[in-house]
Length: 487
Image (cartoon, rainbow, N blue to C red; front, top):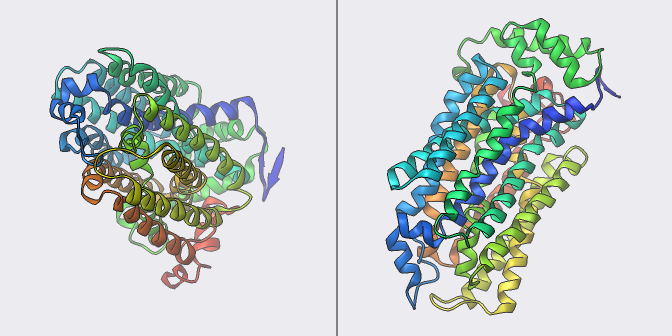
Protein backbone atom coordinates (compact mmCIF):
# COMPACT_ATOMS: atom_id res chain seq x y z
CA UNK A 1 0.00 0.00 0.00
CA UNK A 2 1.22 3.53 -0.85
CA UNK A 3 0.44 6.65 1.17
CA UNK A 4 1.08 10.13 -0.30
CA UNK A 5 -0.26 13.26 1.44
CA UNK A 6 -3.11 11.25 2.95
CA UNK A 7 -3.90 9.58 -0.37
CA UNK A 8 -3.94 5.85 0.38
CA UNK A 9 -3.89 3.36 -2.49
CA UNK A 10 -3.19 -0.24 -3.36
CA UNK A 11 -3.17 -1.82 -6.81
CA UNK A 12 -5.70 -4.67 -6.95
CA UNK A 13 -7.07 -6.84 -9.76
CA UNK A 14 -10.13 -4.61 -10.00
CA UNK A 15 -7.99 -1.46 -10.17
CA UNK A 16 -5.90 -2.94 -13.00
CA UNK A 17 -9.01 -4.07 -14.86
CA UNK A 18 -10.42 -0.52 -14.70
CA UNK A 19 -7.25 0.90 -16.21
CA UNK A 20 -6.91 -1.70 -18.95
CA UNK A 21 -10.57 -1.90 -19.99
CA UNK A 22 -10.85 1.88 -20.27
CA UNK A 23 -7.61 2.06 -22.24
CA UNK A 24 -9.27 0.00 -25.00
CA UNK A 25 -10.67 3.37 -26.08
CA UNK A 26 -7.11 4.12 -27.14
CA UNK A 27 -6.87 0.82 -28.99
CA UNK A 28 -9.94 1.81 -31.05
CA UNK A 29 -8.25 5.06 -32.06
CA UNK A 30 -4.92 3.39 -32.80
CA UNK A 31 -6.48 0.62 -34.85
CA UNK A 32 -8.17 3.17 -37.08
CA UNK A 33 -4.96 5.19 -37.52
CA UNK A 34 -3.08 2.05 -38.54
CA UNK A 35 -5.77 0.49 -40.70
CA UNK A 36 -6.51 3.55 -42.86
CA UNK A 37 -3.12 3.84 -44.54
CA UNK A 38 -2.89 0.12 -45.28
CA UNK A 39 -6.40 -0.09 -46.69
CA UNK A 40 -5.88 3.01 -48.86
CA UNK A 41 -2.89 1.25 -50.48
CA UNK A 42 -4.77 -2.02 -51.25
CA UNK A 43 -5.50 -2.56 -54.94
CA UNK A 44 -8.94 -4.12 -54.36
CA UNK A 45 -10.00 -1.09 -52.30
CA UNK A 46 -8.63 1.39 -54.83
CA UNK A 47 -10.24 -0.39 -57.79
CA UNK A 48 -13.67 -0.20 -56.15
CA UNK A 49 -13.59 3.34 -54.76
CA UNK A 50 -10.64 5.25 -56.27
CA UNK A 51 -10.12 3.85 -59.76
CA UNK A 52 -8.06 6.81 -60.97
CA UNK A 53 -5.55 6.34 -58.14
CA UNK A 54 -5.33 2.63 -58.96
CA UNK A 55 -4.63 3.37 -62.62
CA UNK A 56 -2.01 5.98 -61.74
CA UNK A 57 -0.34 3.55 -59.31
CA UNK A 58 -0.05 0.85 -62.00
CA UNK A 59 1.60 3.01 -64.65
CA UNK A 60 5.03 1.83 -65.72
CA UNK A 61 6.63 5.19 -64.95
CA UNK A 62 5.03 6.89 -61.99
CA UNK A 63 5.98 9.81 -59.84
CA UNK A 64 7.14 8.46 -56.47
CA UNK A 65 5.86 11.49 -54.61
CA UNK A 66 2.52 12.00 -56.39
CA UNK A 67 1.04 8.60 -57.22
CA UNK A 68 -1.36 8.63 -54.23
CA UNK A 69 -2.21 12.34 -54.41
CA UNK A 70 -6.02 12.31 -54.53
CA UNK A 71 -8.28 14.56 -52.46
CA UNK A 72 -11.10 11.98 -52.19
CA UNK A 73 -8.66 9.30 -51.09
CA UNK A 74 -7.37 11.64 -48.42
CA UNK A 75 -10.96 12.49 -47.47
CA UNK A 76 -11.40 8.77 -46.68
CA UNK A 77 -8.96 9.32 -43.81
CA UNK A 78 -9.61 12.94 -42.82
CA UNK A 79 -13.44 12.74 -42.69
CA UNK A 80 -13.14 10.68 -39.51
CA UNK A 81 -11.22 13.41 -37.72
CA UNK A 82 -13.52 16.20 -38.84
CA UNK A 83 -16.51 14.36 -37.39
CA UNK A 84 -14.50 13.61 -34.24
CA UNK A 85 -13.78 17.33 -33.89
CA UNK A 86 -17.48 18.18 -33.77
CA UNK A 87 -18.34 15.15 -31.65
CA UNK A 88 -15.82 16.05 -28.93
CA UNK A 89 -17.92 19.05 -27.80
CA UNK A 90 -21.05 16.91 -27.53
CA UNK A 91 -18.92 14.34 -25.70
CA UNK A 92 -17.85 17.03 -23.22
CA UNK A 93 -21.49 17.70 -22.35
CA UNK A 94 -22.24 13.97 -22.15
CA UNK A 95 -19.25 13.34 -19.87
CA UNK A 96 -20.43 16.11 -17.54
CA UNK A 97 -24.16 15.29 -17.50
CA UNK A 98 -24.14 11.49 -17.93
CA UNK A 99 -20.73 10.60 -16.52
CA UNK A 100 -17.52 9.13 -17.94
CA UNK A 101 -18.78 5.54 -17.96
CA UNK A 102 -21.94 6.13 -20.06
CA UNK A 103 -20.01 8.34 -22.48
CA UNK A 104 -17.45 5.58 -23.04
CA UNK A 105 -20.29 3.14 -23.67
CA UNK A 106 -21.74 5.52 -26.26
CA UNK A 107 -18.31 5.82 -27.90
CA UNK A 108 -17.99 2.06 -28.30
CA UNK A 109 -21.48 1.59 -29.77
CA UNK A 110 -21.05 4.37 -32.34
CA UNK A 111 -17.63 3.02 -33.29
CA UNK A 112 -19.12 -0.44 -33.83
CA UNK A 113 -21.73 1.10 -36.15
CA UNK A 114 -18.89 2.75 -38.09
CA UNK A 115 -17.01 -0.54 -38.43
CA UNK A 116 -20.06 -2.36 -39.75
CA UNK A 117 -20.91 0.43 -42.22
CA UNK A 118 -17.34 0.62 -43.52
CA UNK A 119 -16.98 -3.12 -43.95
CA UNK A 120 -20.27 -3.38 -45.87
CA UNK A 121 -19.74 -0.31 -48.07
CA UNK A 122 -20.28 -0.67 -51.81
CA UNK A 123 -20.11 3.01 -52.74
CA UNK A 124 -18.26 6.11 -51.58
CA UNK A 125 -21.25 7.56 -49.71
CA UNK A 126 -21.57 4.55 -47.39
CA UNK A 127 -17.79 4.41 -47.04
CA UNK A 128 -17.64 8.05 -45.91
CA UNK A 129 -20.68 7.52 -43.64
CA UNK A 130 -18.76 4.72 -41.95
CA UNK A 131 -15.78 7.03 -41.50
CA UNK A 132 -18.00 9.71 -39.96
CA UNK A 133 -19.44 7.20 -37.47
CA UNK A 134 -15.90 6.07 -36.68
CA UNK A 135 -15.09 9.72 -36.04
CA UNK A 136 -17.99 10.31 -33.67
CA UNK A 137 -16.95 7.22 -31.71
CA UNK A 138 -13.35 8.46 -31.60
CA UNK A 139 -14.49 11.93 -30.52
CA UNK A 140 -16.47 10.51 -27.60
CA UNK A 141 -13.73 8.04 -26.66
CA UNK A 142 -10.81 10.45 -26.84
CA UNK A 143 -12.71 13.03 -24.79
CA UNK A 144 -13.61 10.59 -22.02
CA UNK A 145 -10.96 7.88 -21.66
CA UNK A 146 -7.97 10.11 -20.76
CA UNK A 147 -10.14 11.97 -18.23
CA UNK A 148 -11.35 8.69 -16.76
CA UNK A 149 -7.81 7.33 -16.42
CA UNK A 150 -6.51 10.54 -14.86
CA UNK A 151 -9.37 10.73 -12.36
CA UNK A 152 -9.14 7.10 -11.21
CA UNK A 153 -5.32 6.99 -11.03
CA UNK A 154 -3.53 7.42 -7.69
CA UNK A 155 -1.32 10.51 -7.71
CA UNK A 156 1.99 8.63 -7.71
CA UNK A 157 0.98 6.60 -10.78
CA UNK A 158 -1.11 9.21 -12.60
CA UNK A 159 1.30 9.71 -15.49
CA UNK A 160 1.84 6.00 -16.06
CA UNK A 161 -1.88 5.15 -15.88
CA UNK A 162 -2.85 7.92 -18.29
CA UNK A 163 -0.17 6.78 -20.73
CA UNK A 164 -1.96 3.44 -20.95
CA UNK A 165 -4.26 5.32 -23.34
CA UNK A 166 -1.33 6.13 -25.64
CA UNK A 167 0.13 2.64 -25.18
CA UNK A 168 -3.10 1.11 -26.39
CA UNK A 169 -3.13 3.54 -29.32
CA UNK A 170 0.28 2.20 -30.35
CA UNK A 171 -0.86 -1.40 -29.82
CA UNK A 172 -3.88 -0.64 -32.01
CA UNK A 173 -1.62 0.72 -34.75
CA UNK A 174 0.59 -2.37 -34.59
CA UNK A 175 -2.38 -4.77 -34.66
CA UNK A 176 -3.81 -2.87 -37.64
CA UNK A 177 -0.52 -3.19 -39.51
CA UNK A 178 -0.45 -6.94 -38.83
CA UNK A 179 -4.06 -7.30 -39.96
CA UNK A 180 -3.30 -5.38 -43.17
CA UNK A 181 -0.24 -7.57 -43.75
CA UNK A 182 -2.56 -10.59 -43.79
CA UNK A 183 -5.60 -9.14 -45.55
CA UNK A 184 -3.65 -7.52 -48.41
CA UNK A 185 -3.41 -11.05 -49.87
CA UNK A 186 -7.12 -11.86 -49.38
CA UNK A 187 -8.89 -10.92 -52.62
CA UNK A 188 -11.18 -9.14 -53.24
CA UNK A 189 -12.48 -8.41 -49.72
CA UNK A 190 -9.38 -8.21 -47.58
CA UNK A 191 -9.98 -4.52 -46.99
CA UNK A 192 -13.46 -5.31 -45.63
CA UNK A 193 -11.91 -7.62 -43.03
CA UNK A 194 -9.45 -4.88 -42.06
CA UNK A 195 -12.16 -2.26 -41.53
CA UNK A 196 -14.72 -4.64 -40.00
CA UNK A 197 -12.25 -5.94 -37.41
CA UNK A 198 -12.50 -2.57 -35.69
CA UNK A 199 -15.57 -3.96 -33.91
CA UNK A 200 -13.31 -6.06 -31.66
CA UNK A 201 -11.66 -3.33 -29.52
CA UNK A 202 -14.95 -1.39 -29.44
CA UNK A 203 -16.79 -4.48 -28.17
CA UNK A 204 -14.20 -4.97 -25.42
CA UNK A 205 -14.67 -1.35 -24.32
CA UNK A 206 -18.45 -1.74 -24.41
CA UNK A 207 -18.36 -4.88 -22.25
CA UNK A 208 -15.80 -3.23 -19.99
CA UNK A 209 -18.22 -0.45 -19.10
CA UNK A 210 -20.33 -3.07 -17.31
CA UNK A 211 -17.34 -3.93 -15.09
CA UNK A 212 -16.02 -0.50 -14.15
CA UNK A 213 -17.62 2.21 -12.03
CA UNK A 214 -17.80 5.87 -12.95
CA UNK A 215 -15.06 8.08 -11.50
CA UNK A 216 -15.54 9.41 -7.94
CA UNK A 217 -15.20 12.99 -9.23
CA UNK A 218 -17.95 12.48 -11.80
CA UNK A 219 -20.26 10.84 -9.25
CA UNK A 220 -19.81 13.64 -6.70
CA UNK A 221 -20.30 16.29 -9.39
CA UNK A 222 -23.57 14.61 -10.41
CA UNK A 223 -24.90 14.50 -6.84
CA UNK A 224 -24.10 10.89 -5.93
CA UNK A 225 -21.72 11.24 -2.95
CA UNK A 226 -22.36 7.82 -1.41
CA UNK A 227 -21.71 6.00 -4.68
CA UNK A 228 -18.63 8.18 -5.15
CA UNK A 229 -17.13 7.08 -1.84
CA UNK A 230 -17.77 3.41 -2.65
CA UNK A 231 -16.21 3.90 -6.09
CA UNK A 232 -13.18 5.66 -4.58
CA UNK A 233 -12.58 2.78 -2.17
CA UNK A 234 -12.71 0.31 -5.08
CA UNK A 235 -10.30 2.23 -7.35
CA UNK A 236 -7.89 2.82 -4.46
CA UNK A 237 -8.06 -0.75 -3.16
CA UNK A 238 -8.29 0.48 0.45
CA UNK A 239 -11.06 1.56 2.83
CA UNK A 240 -9.37 4.63 4.34
CA UNK A 241 -10.01 7.25 1.64
CA UNK A 242 -11.48 10.04 3.79
CA UNK A 243 -8.80 12.66 3.05
CA UNK A 244 -8.95 12.23 -0.72
CA UNK A 245 -12.74 12.01 -0.67
CA UNK A 246 -13.04 15.32 1.17
CA UNK A 247 -10.69 16.94 -1.34
CA UNK A 248 -12.85 15.67 -4.20
CA UNK A 249 -16.03 16.96 -2.55
CA UNK A 250 -14.44 20.37 -1.93
CA UNK A 251 -13.26 20.55 -5.53
CA UNK A 252 -16.68 19.62 -6.89
CA UNK A 253 -18.42 22.13 -4.59
CA UNK A 254 -16.18 24.85 -5.97
CA UNK A 255 -16.90 23.65 -9.52
CA UNK A 256 -20.66 23.90 -8.90
CA UNK A 257 -20.29 27.65 -8.51
CA UNK A 258 -19.37 27.78 -12.20
CA UNK A 259 -22.48 27.83 -14.39
CA UNK A 260 -20.83 28.23 -17.79
CA UNK A 261 -17.73 26.04 -18.07
CA UNK A 262 -16.78 27.09 -21.60
CA UNK A 263 -17.08 30.79 -20.70
CA UNK A 264 -14.88 30.24 -17.64
CA UNK A 265 -12.05 28.97 -19.82
CA UNK A 266 -11.20 32.65 -20.39
CA UNK A 267 -10.52 33.22 -16.66
CA UNK A 268 -6.93 33.12 -15.29
CA UNK A 269 -6.97 29.63 -13.65
CA UNK A 270 -7.96 28.05 -16.99
CA UNK A 271 -6.00 30.19 -19.49
CA UNK A 272 -2.58 28.54 -19.01
CA UNK A 273 -3.85 24.95 -19.26
CA UNK A 274 -6.06 25.93 -22.23
CA UNK A 275 -3.12 27.44 -24.13
CA UNK A 276 -0.90 24.48 -23.24
CA UNK A 277 -3.59 21.95 -24.18
CA UNK A 278 -4.25 23.51 -27.59
CA UNK A 279 -0.57 24.02 -28.44
CA UNK A 280 0.38 20.48 -27.37
CA UNK A 281 -2.23 19.06 -29.76
CA UNK A 282 -1.08 21.27 -32.64
CA UNK A 283 2.54 20.39 -32.03
CA UNK A 284 1.74 16.70 -31.61
CA UNK A 285 0.37 16.60 -35.16
CA UNK A 286 3.08 18.79 -36.69
CA UNK A 287 5.80 16.46 -35.50
CA UNK A 288 4.70 14.58 -38.62
CA UNK A 289 3.92 11.41 -36.68
CA UNK A 290 0.46 10.79 -38.10
CA UNK A 291 1.72 11.54 -41.58
CA UNK A 292 4.08 8.61 -41.10
CA UNK A 293 1.61 6.35 -39.26
CA UNK A 294 -1.36 7.03 -41.57
CA UNK A 295 0.61 6.45 -44.69
CA UNK A 296 3.49 4.21 -43.58
CA UNK A 297 2.76 1.59 -46.29
CA UNK A 298 2.39 4.32 -48.93
CA UNK A 299 5.46 6.15 -47.65
CA UNK A 300 7.65 3.07 -47.83
CA UNK A 301 6.40 2.34 -51.34
CA UNK A 302 7.42 5.88 -52.24
CA UNK A 303 10.90 5.10 -50.90
CA UNK A 304 11.15 2.15 -53.25
CA UNK A 305 9.97 -0.82 -51.17
CA UNK A 306 7.92 -3.21 -53.29
CA UNK A 307 5.38 -5.96 -52.66
CA UNK A 308 4.79 -6.62 -48.97
CA UNK A 309 7.88 -4.62 -48.01
CA UNK A 310 5.90 -1.49 -47.06
CA UNK A 311 3.64 -3.36 -44.65
CA UNK A 312 6.58 -5.23 -43.11
CA UNK A 313 8.33 -1.89 -42.55
CA UNK A 314 5.15 -0.48 -41.03
CA UNK A 315 4.94 -3.44 -38.64
CA UNK A 316 8.53 -2.76 -37.58
CA UNK A 317 7.82 0.90 -36.84
CA UNK A 318 4.60 -0.09 -35.07
CA UNK A 319 6.53 -2.45 -32.79
CA UNK A 320 9.02 0.29 -31.98
CA UNK A 321 6.07 2.57 -31.17
CA UNK A 322 4.64 0.10 -28.64
CA UNK A 323 7.94 -0.67 -26.92
CA UNK A 324 8.92 2.99 -26.68
CA UNK A 325 5.59 3.94 -25.14
CA UNK A 326 6.39 1.43 -22.39
CA UNK A 327 9.50 3.54 -21.71
CA UNK A 328 7.19 6.52 -21.15
CA UNK A 329 5.12 4.55 -18.64
CA UNK A 330 8.29 3.91 -16.64
CA UNK A 331 9.89 7.35 -17.02
CA UNK A 332 7.07 9.87 -16.88
CA UNK A 333 6.62 9.81 -13.09
CA UNK A 334 10.38 9.56 -12.49
CA UNK A 335 12.04 11.79 -15.08
CA UNK A 336 9.10 14.15 -15.48
CA UNK A 337 7.02 15.44 -18.39
CA UNK A 338 9.11 18.42 -19.44
CA UNK A 339 12.48 16.67 -19.77
CA UNK A 340 10.97 13.93 -21.93
CA UNK A 341 9.44 16.50 -24.28
CA UNK A 342 12.66 18.48 -24.68
CA UNK A 343 14.89 15.42 -25.19
CA UNK A 344 12.57 13.98 -27.81
CA UNK A 345 12.56 17.22 -29.81
CA UNK A 346 16.33 16.92 -30.24
CA UNK A 347 16.06 13.29 -31.38
CA UNK A 348 13.10 13.86 -33.73
CA UNK A 349 14.73 16.94 -35.29
CA UNK A 350 17.90 15.01 -36.16
CA UNK A 351 15.87 12.14 -37.67
CA UNK A 352 13.56 14.31 -39.77
CA UNK A 353 16.43 16.41 -41.16
CA UNK A 354 18.45 13.28 -41.97
CA UNK A 355 15.47 11.62 -43.76
CA UNK A 356 14.90 14.80 -45.74
CA UNK A 357 18.52 14.99 -46.91
CA UNK A 358 18.63 11.31 -47.85
CA UNK A 359 15.46 11.52 -49.93
CA UNK A 360 16.54 14.84 -51.46
CA UNK A 361 19.84 13.37 -52.65
CA UNK A 362 18.80 9.80 -53.47
CA UNK A 363 15.10 9.59 -54.40
CA UNK A 364 14.10 10.98 -57.77
CA UNK A 365 10.55 11.29 -59.09
CA UNK A 366 10.90 7.81 -60.59
CA UNK A 367 12.91 4.82 -59.39
CA UNK A 368 13.67 4.05 -55.75
CA UNK A 369 16.28 4.06 -53.03
CA UNK A 370 19.01 1.48 -53.05
CA UNK A 371 18.79 -1.16 -50.35
CA UNK A 372 21.33 0.46 -48.05
CA UNK A 373 19.72 3.87 -48.14
CA UNK A 374 16.25 2.38 -47.74
CA UNK A 375 17.34 0.57 -44.58
CA UNK A 376 18.92 3.74 -43.22
CA UNK A 377 15.61 5.56 -43.75
CA UNK A 378 13.73 2.79 -41.93
CA UNK A 379 16.21 3.06 -39.05
CA UNK A 380 15.74 6.84 -38.89
CA UNK A 381 11.96 6.49 -39.01
CA UNK A 382 12.17 4.02 -36.10
CA UNK A 383 14.40 6.37 -34.08
CA UNK A 384 11.95 9.18 -34.79
CA UNK A 385 8.93 7.08 -33.78
CA UNK A 386 10.82 6.01 -30.65
CA UNK A 387 11.32 9.62 -29.52
CA UNK A 388 7.70 10.57 -30.23
CA UNK A 389 6.34 7.50 -28.44
CA UNK A 390 7.94 8.30 -25.10
CA UNK A 391 7.10 12.02 -25.21
CA UNK A 392 4.75 14.05 -27.41
CA UNK A 393 2.52 11.04 -28.11
CA UNK A 394 1.45 10.16 -24.55
CA UNK A 395 2.12 13.53 -22.93
CA UNK A 396 -0.07 15.33 -25.46
CA UNK A 397 -2.99 13.52 -23.82
CA UNK A 398 -1.68 13.36 -20.24
CA UNK A 399 -0.84 17.01 -19.59
CA UNK A 400 -4.20 18.50 -20.71
CA UNK A 401 -6.11 15.87 -18.72
CA UNK A 402 -4.32 16.71 -15.46
CA UNK A 403 -3.92 20.50 -15.56
CA UNK A 404 -7.44 21.94 -15.86
CA UNK A 405 -9.34 22.85 -12.64
CA UNK A 406 -12.42 20.70 -11.98
CA UNK A 407 -14.90 23.37 -13.03
CA UNK A 408 -13.54 23.55 -16.60
CA UNK A 409 -11.96 20.10 -16.98
CA UNK A 410 -14.34 18.50 -19.48
CA UNK A 411 -14.79 21.76 -21.41
CA UNK A 412 -11.06 22.41 -21.55
CA UNK A 413 -10.25 18.87 -22.55
CA UNK A 414 -12.90 19.10 -25.29
CA UNK A 415 -10.82 21.91 -26.81
CA UNK A 416 -7.74 19.70 -26.59
CA UNK A 417 -9.48 16.78 -28.32
CA UNK A 418 -11.11 18.96 -30.98
CA UNK A 419 -7.80 20.69 -31.72
CA UNK A 420 -6.13 17.30 -32.04
CA UNK A 421 -8.84 16.09 -34.41
CA UNK A 422 -8.74 19.31 -36.48
CA UNK A 423 -5.02 19.17 -37.07
CA UNK A 424 -5.06 15.41 -37.53
CA UNK A 425 -7.65 15.99 -40.27
CA UNK A 426 -5.52 18.71 -41.83
CA UNK A 427 -2.47 16.43 -41.90
CA UNK A 428 -4.51 13.51 -43.21
CA UNK A 429 -6.10 15.61 -45.94
CA UNK A 430 -2.98 17.50 -46.95
CA UNK A 431 -0.02 15.15 -46.43
CA UNK A 432 -0.09 13.27 -49.74
CA UNK A 433 -0.63 16.54 -51.64
CA UNK A 434 2.17 18.17 -49.62
CA UNK A 435 4.42 15.20 -50.38
CA UNK A 436 3.64 15.67 -54.07
CA UNK A 437 4.36 19.42 -53.99
CA UNK A 438 7.32 19.59 -51.61
CA UNK A 439 8.85 16.14 -52.24
CA UNK A 440 11.65 15.56 -49.72
CA UNK A 441 11.24 19.09 -48.37
CA UNK A 442 8.13 17.81 -46.58
CA UNK A 443 10.45 16.45 -43.88
CA UNK A 444 12.19 19.82 -43.50
CA UNK A 445 8.75 21.38 -43.02
CA UNK A 446 8.08 19.08 -40.06
CA UNK A 447 11.63 19.69 -38.77
CA UNK A 448 10.94 23.41 -38.46
CA UNK A 449 7.87 22.67 -36.37
CA UNK A 450 9.85 20.35 -34.09
CA UNK A 451 12.37 23.14 -33.45
CA UNK A 452 9.56 25.51 -32.42
CA UNK A 453 8.05 22.78 -30.20
CA UNK A 454 11.30 22.44 -28.31
CA UNK A 455 11.42 26.17 -27.58
CA UNK A 456 7.80 26.09 -26.42
CA UNK A 457 8.51 23.24 -23.98
CA UNK A 458 11.54 25.06 -22.58
CA UNK A 459 9.90 28.44 -22.00
CA UNK A 460 6.18 27.79 -21.45
CA UNK A 461 5.69 24.34 -19.94
CA UNK A 462 5.77 23.79 -16.16
CA UNK A 463 6.64 20.42 -14.66
CA UNK A 464 3.47 18.74 -13.35
CA UNK A 465 5.01 15.52 -12.03
CA UNK A 466 3.79 14.68 -8.52
CA UNK A 467 1.36 17.62 -8.25
CA UNK A 468 -2.24 16.75 -7.23
CA UNK A 469 -4.75 17.66 -9.96
CA UNK A 470 -6.54 20.22 -7.78
CA UNK A 471 -3.27 21.90 -6.70
CA UNK A 472 -2.09 22.75 -10.23
CA UNK A 473 -2.98 26.45 -10.01
CA UNK A 474 -1.05 27.03 -6.79
CA UNK A 475 1.91 24.72 -7.42
CA UNK A 476 2.39 24.92 -11.18
CA UNK A 477 0.84 27.96 -12.86
CA UNK A 478 1.35 30.56 -10.11
CA UNK A 479 5.02 29.58 -9.80
CA UNK A 480 5.84 29.56 -13.51
CA UNK A 481 7.81 32.65 -14.66
CA UNK A 482 5.47 33.26 -17.63
CA UNK A 483 2.06 32.18 -16.38
CA UNK A 484 2.28 33.67 -12.88
CA UNK A 485 1.74 37.11 -14.44
CA UNK A 486 -1.92 36.19 -15.04
CA UNK A 487 -2.63 35.79 -11.33
